[in-house]
Length: 187
Image (cartoon, rainbow, N blue to C red; front, side):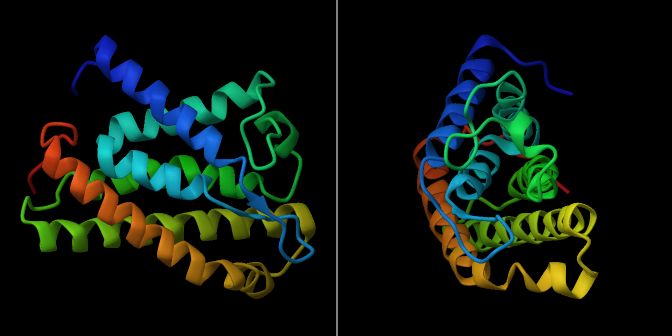
């Protein structure tokens, strides 16, 4: 496993801050308390650009600062306030998804079209993880049955798919310009 240096820590902190800033945009939808946010796009982008370890740790840092009261989630509420709410599963999903998205992204070929396609697949896998974890949280916190909890993600699908495509395009351009930003892993 690669050891982290001061530059890695600074980049992870910058991406954690970006994810927090993207929480300023939150549009409430439905009655379940799950808003439309750009934070999940920030997590996808961090993982696509930084890889599994650094992208996952940037997401962990984003979540951790909210545990000490920093307003880091949608509407600038701290993570600590969400732990007992219906969105807790999505937060767990954010963390798992970041590591998985990054692991897939690190296997992306360097060719542009194939790289973009791999990034899109990685982002979509991440969104599915977020939805599954979020649905589990809704089942636990709100007592929903699995089909109801999964269906509650319906209004978000198109927007999240668009966020994945935008993140993939941005990440492809950035990793072309800065090829060593995303660690490569073969196999």
